[in-house]
Amino acid sequence: MASHNFPILQTEKFVLRQFVESDLSAIFKGLSDPEVIQYYGISFKTLEETKEQLQFFADLEANETGIWWAICSLDNQTFYGGGGFNNRSKEHKKAEIGFWLLKDFWGQGIMTEILPLLCQYGFDHLDLHRIEGFVETENFKCKKAMQKLAFNHEGTMKDCEIKDGKFISIDIYALLKNDGVQ
Image (cartoon, rainbow, N blue to C red):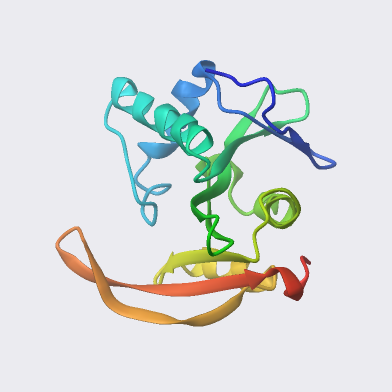
């Protein structure tokens, strides 16, 4: 499953590497936690179901429609979450950014350190001109992070999706290559 040319990214505190089979239980821990998935598009009820997520990551890479990294400590002993791009359009030079963290690591500035690195990678290596973030209107923490990282709020799609039997609205954020990464 692991490809040899997968880009490994690093900050002062974190390494971003390819997801591997041994990450399955950590992915399940995150994507089955009601608080973590409250504003996330998917959730899993079993470890077996979670294998779909590993396949999703592999398919993004194989189809060149995105790339997601596992966010880990420098010594690779602690798994924090995941982040990356999906819905990449080569034609329009854009992709959607996404991320999630295990609850234990919320509020520690991890995304503030990781997101600029992801954006820079997207602009420099994926030939992106535009990085989009679609954030549920009620997800105030994520919206705050997007603004802190100089993503521009472009508008709100009101009642555009149904989740748990109720309409939800989605705020659209974008960072353009010319905006410069903070």
